[in-house]
Length: 161
Image (cartoon, rainbow, N blue to C red; front, side, top):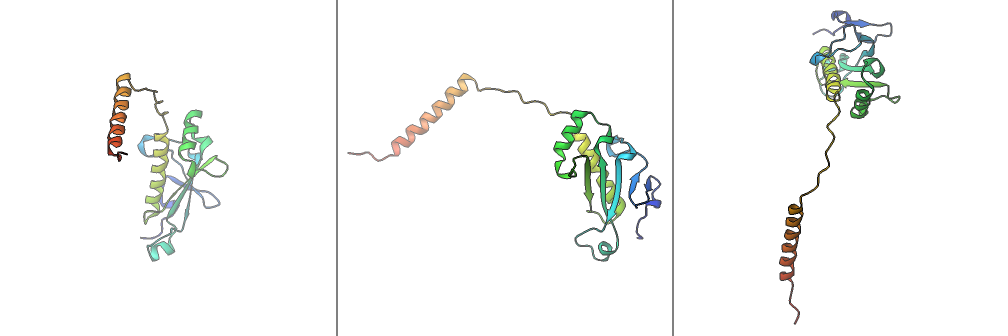
Protein backbone atom coordinates (compact mmCIF):
# COMPACT_ATOMS: atom_id res chain seq x y z
CA UNK A 1 0.00 0.00 0.00
CA UNK A 2 1.52 3.36 -0.96
CA UNK A 3 2.08 5.98 1.70
CA UNK A 4 -1.11 7.95 2.39
CA UNK A 5 -1.04 11.62 1.51
CA UNK A 6 -3.35 14.35 2.87
CA UNK A 7 -4.62 15.08 -0.64
CA UNK A 8 -5.98 11.50 -0.71
CA UNK A 9 -8.51 12.50 1.94
CA UNK A 10 -11.06 15.13 0.94
CA UNK A 11 -11.79 16.04 4.57
CA UNK A 12 -8.18 17.01 5.30
CA UNK A 13 -6.25 20.18 4.57
CA UNK A 14 -2.50 20.66 4.74
CA UNK A 15 -0.93 23.96 5.69
CA UNK A 16 2.44 25.36 4.56
CA UNK A 17 4.33 23.59 7.38
CA UNK A 18 2.94 20.19 6.39
CA UNK A 19 0.59 20.06 9.35
CA UNK A 20 -2.74 18.47 8.52
CA UNK A 21 -6.05 19.56 10.03
CA UNK A 22 -9.61 18.39 9.54
CA UNK A 23 -11.81 20.62 7.37
CA UNK A 24 -14.94 19.00 8.75
CA UNK A 25 -15.66 19.03 12.42
CA UNK A 26 -17.44 15.72 12.95
CA UNK A 27 -16.02 13.26 15.46
CA UNK A 28 -17.10 9.75 16.30
CA UNK A 29 -20.15 9.48 18.59
CA UNK A 30 -21.91 12.31 16.76
CA UNK A 31 -19.78 15.10 18.21
CA UNK A 32 -18.69 18.15 16.29
CA UNK A 33 -15.82 20.51 17.08
CA UNK A 34 -14.49 23.59 15.28
CA UNK A 35 -12.09 22.68 12.49
CA UNK A 36 -9.56 25.25 13.68
CA UNK A 37 -9.13 23.41 17.00
CA UNK A 38 -7.79 20.18 15.39
CA UNK A 39 -4.32 19.81 13.95
CA UNK A 40 -2.79 16.52 12.75
CA UNK A 41 0.86 15.75 12.20
CA UNK A 42 2.40 12.41 11.30
CA UNK A 43 5.65 10.84 12.42
CA UNK A 44 7.53 7.58 12.13
CA UNK A 45 5.97 4.92 14.32
CA UNK A 46 7.93 2.82 16.81
CA UNK A 47 8.07 -0.88 17.61
CA UNK A 48 7.98 -3.97 15.41
CA UNK A 49 6.75 -3.78 11.85
CA UNK A 50 9.90 -3.98 9.79
CA UNK A 51 10.08 -2.00 6.60
CA UNK A 52 6.58 -0.52 6.97
CA UNK A 53 7.57 1.14 10.26
CA UNK A 54 10.95 2.30 8.99
CA UNK A 55 9.67 3.86 5.75
CA UNK A 56 6.24 5.26 6.54
CA UNK A 57 5.10 8.05 8.84
CA UNK A 58 2.01 6.31 10.20
CA UNK A 59 1.95 7.59 13.78
CA UNK A 60 -0.79 10.20 14.09
CA UNK A 61 -0.38 13.10 16.51
CA UNK A 62 -3.52 15.17 17.14
CA UNK A 63 -3.19 18.57 18.77
CA UNK A 64 -6.42 20.09 20.05
CA UNK A 65 -6.70 23.70 21.16
CA UNK A 66 -8.95 23.38 24.21
CA UNK A 67 -10.12 27.00 24.18
CA UNK A 68 -11.47 26.58 20.66
CA UNK A 69 -13.56 23.49 21.44
CA UNK A 70 -16.42 25.65 22.68
CA UNK A 71 -16.95 23.66 25.87
CA UNK A 72 -18.44 25.09 29.04
CA UNK A 73 -15.94 26.16 31.69
CA UNK A 74 -16.83 23.31 34.08
CA UNK A 75 -16.66 20.73 31.28
CA UNK A 76 -13.29 22.09 30.21
CA UNK A 77 -11.98 21.84 33.79
CA UNK A 78 -13.12 18.20 34.03
CA UNK A 79 -11.51 17.45 30.65
CA UNK A 80 -8.23 19.01 31.78
CA UNK A 81 -8.28 16.98 35.00
CA UNK A 82 -9.15 13.69 33.29
CA UNK A 83 -6.70 14.13 30.41
CA UNK A 84 -3.84 15.71 32.37
CA UNK A 85 -1.27 13.27 30.97
CA UNK A 86 -2.07 14.42 27.42
CA UNK A 87 -1.88 18.16 28.13
CA UNK A 88 0.95 20.28 26.81
CA UNK A 89 3.09 22.27 29.22
CA UNK A 90 0.90 25.38 28.85
CA UNK A 91 -2.25 23.28 29.62
CA UNK A 92 -3.97 24.85 26.60
CA UNK A 93 -3.38 22.04 24.11
CA UNK A 94 -4.35 18.40 24.27
CA UNK A 95 -1.84 16.14 22.46
CA UNK A 96 -3.10 12.66 21.51
CA UNK A 97 -0.90 10.00 19.86
CA UNK A 98 -1.90 6.82 18.05
CA UNK A 99 0.53 4.36 16.49
CA UNK A 100 -1.18 1.01 17.12
CA UNK A 101 -2.23 0.50 13.51
CA UNK A 102 -0.17 0.07 10.37
CA UNK A 103 -2.04 2.71 8.40
CA UNK A 104 -2.04 6.45 8.88
CA UNK A 105 -5.80 6.70 8.39
CA UNK A 106 -6.60 4.15 11.09
CA UNK A 107 -4.28 5.93 13.54
CA UNK A 108 -5.93 9.22 12.65
CA UNK A 109 -9.37 7.73 13.37
CA UNK A 110 -8.02 6.31 16.64
CA UNK A 111 -6.94 9.81 17.71
CA UNK A 112 -10.38 11.21 16.91
CA UNK A 113 -12.03 8.33 18.79
CA UNK A 114 -9.89 9.04 21.86
CA UNK A 115 -10.77 12.72 21.70
CA UNK A 116 -14.47 11.90 21.42
CA UNK A 117 -14.22 9.48 24.36
CA UNK A 118 -12.48 12.12 26.49
CA UNK A 119 -15.14 14.72 25.66
CA UNK A 120 -18.08 12.37 26.25
CA UNK A 121 -16.72 10.90 29.48
CA UNK A 122 -16.24 14.35 30.99
CA UNK A 123 -19.46 15.90 29.69
CA UNK A 124 -21.39 15.46 32.94
CA UNK A 125 -20.10 16.01 36.43
CA UNK A 126 -19.99 12.83 38.48
CA UNK A 127 -22.80 12.44 40.97
CA UNK A 128 -21.68 13.70 44.36
CA UNK A 129 -21.37 11.02 47.00
CA UNK A 130 -24.01 11.20 49.69
CA UNK A 131 -22.50 10.79 53.12
CA UNK A 132 -24.07 7.90 54.99
CA UNK A 133 -23.56 6.47 58.44
CA UNK A 134 -24.14 2.98 59.76
CA UNK A 135 -27.35 2.32 61.64
CA UNK A 136 -27.36 1.83 65.40
CA UNK A 137 -27.98 -1.91 64.95
CA UNK A 138 -25.06 -2.19 62.48
CA UNK A 139 -22.73 -0.51 64.98
CA UNK A 140 -23.99 -2.84 67.71
CA UNK A 141 -23.39 -5.94 65.52
CA UNK A 142 -19.88 -4.75 64.69
CA UNK A 143 -19.01 -4.27 68.36
CA UNK A 144 -20.50 -7.66 69.28
CA UNK A 145 -18.44 -9.31 66.55
CA UNK A 146 -15.30 -7.61 67.83
CA UNK A 147 -16.08 -8.75 71.35
CA UNK A 148 -16.57 -12.38 70.19
CA UNK A 149 -13.18 -12.31 68.42
CA UNK A 150 -11.57 -10.80 71.50
CA UNK A 151 -13.08 -13.50 73.75
CA UNK A 152 -11.92 -16.23 71.37
CA UNK A 153 -8.37 -14.91 71.45
CA UNK A 154 -8.48 -14.54 75.22
CA UNK A 155 -9.39 -18.24 75.55
CA UNK A 156 -6.38 -19.24 73.40
CA UNK A 157 -3.92 -17.70 75.84
CA UNK A 158 -1.98 -19.79 78.24
CA UNK A 159 -3.42 -19.85 81.72
CA UNK A 160 -0.90 -18.76 84.37
CA UNK A 161 -1.03 -20.80 87.58
